[in-house]
Length: 159
Image (cartoon, rainbow, N blue to C red):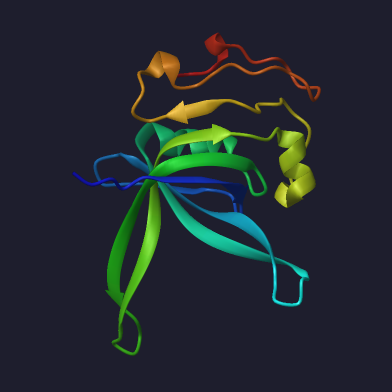
């Protein structure tokens, strides 16, 4: 038995880009940054940012497109998938993507705007999550209207 599971908590580096396959299935792509702090040999604090390419499919892709913006803090759970390709010089390259099956929003729209997401006021949706493997009624929690927008209930969410 083997396990291929990734858990990331970080901020979106750009808005999700969504396209549709020939059969009409949505696929969203976005980048996500995670930060690590450590002390170097001289005892000085250093910060390293790691960038991850995230891919979401189906209903989860549509939700990411609708609710996520650059700067949003999110929890993403999924699996690593490698891709092999040839660069312009004919060299074999490998890249690694995270195929998401769960996404949980950890920041409100106001938090994302402050982080550089460019989103205006709106409704706080911190703490809502989407699990592509869960039944629809359990996949997205309700949120409150803490930052001035209308309150959203489970009946307002179209899935």
